[in-house]
Length: 444
Image 1: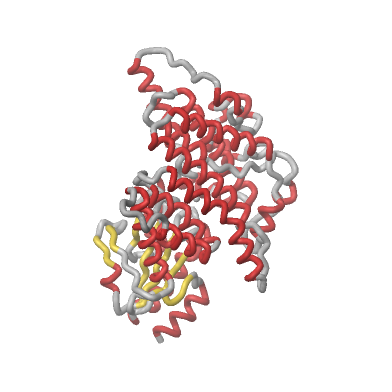
Image 2 (image 1 turned 60 degrees about the horizontal axis):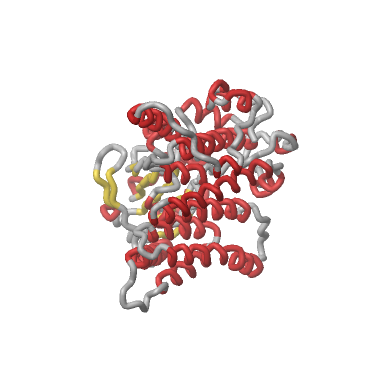
């Protein structure tokens, strides 16, 4: 949060992006990104009155906004779930490449629009897989994710490196323009967006490395070397823009994700950020926000380690106020999930059965749905269908930007935490029979 198309577009992709919208290139099964040279050429002149130009910009921005969600409706989500792994990724590619195309078009055509910096960020965050049109017959024969070695699957894919490099170079040049022509705030945002793009690309490669059991010391050394340049780059970003009020949230974006891959390394980096310029008499506002974020994250780590109780307060999906502290004295399962997460959806009936079995003995469930706003009705329908009547947090801002996900470094779904009667985490990611056995141990 994710992230070539079929030689002949599947029904799901055809429904996602009508062929007529993108002309011959789309009809041939490939969206084309802008060449690098186009980024540096003059912007497209806009004809018509100011009001007409504003209407055209608003229309283009609305079109870009529609690419924020992977699915436009529940039917499209169902079609996606019916596809095999490779075709799911091609489906994601179609959406990502369309997002990049629209973001670049907005950035190019409306140089004076206040949303141009957001369009640049959208372009850099498109993150296609760039699966090649040719050479993936073997992965295409795999019918399901079940039992699949996901790491080996990713490493086996043939990637369209020419298109990928074009996207990378175009993004680099767009950022150079922003750094040269934008305000300090625009430059900071562009610089971090480029950092985030590169970090996501590196993360994709890292999670597919074939780490084996019994190799902890080796991979610990690899992690330290692999991520060191990114920390150095982030620290330099902070020192370049020390007054930016966004630095605290930038650090959470970076290190909360890193924590999912290398928790010890992320902890080390949080401690370094807490010490950054700590001895100065006058600490810039941005650095101060970094220090505050570091203190919050280090406390969150104590929560995750079971040292202190977990606290949550929110307005639930049904409109009722909820406080986790009200459930002290009970055993509580906190379930982080989303409607697009197939294992999460498949687990819901099992959680419901265990809730029914053990509720009278003091077992409760709290759901943390990490969908975006477009899935609100879909989530309600699914919960109603499964009879999941426990409190559900639904902020509607999606996986990537959710405050709890960032605070606790949740990098994948499903994620579940089991809390004891004091509200402290005593187990993580127990599912099915393992969760049932633990509940029987605690509550029988």
